[in-house]
Length: 138
Image (cartoon, rainbow, N blue to C red):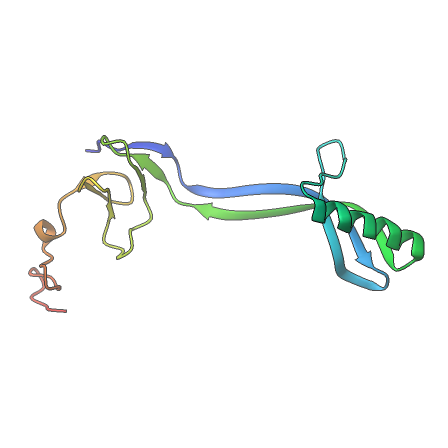
């Protein structure tokens, strides 16, 4: 039985972004990309981006840059499930650093499904390493 509240069910997260792309003349992929708003306006967050955008516009006029327009990109990644322990901490259910379990700062330990499990030493693992069940030592 679990006392962990699942706050995010793990799975593949997909995202899309759009950029206004400029390439150096004759060299596809050599250039700049600037994020755009949903209505296609270039988002310039700082002075360096503003300077580079002006250089790209000037390069298009000079013939040294090519304006490739707005391109859409897609990517995805896997995000592990997360849960909130009764103590208030967020626990990422990824197997932990050792792969043996997902422990919280308060001392509770959870399996990958978010179910509360016994302490490692109660499950057969001894402080110096190895499993008392299998009679091994690390």
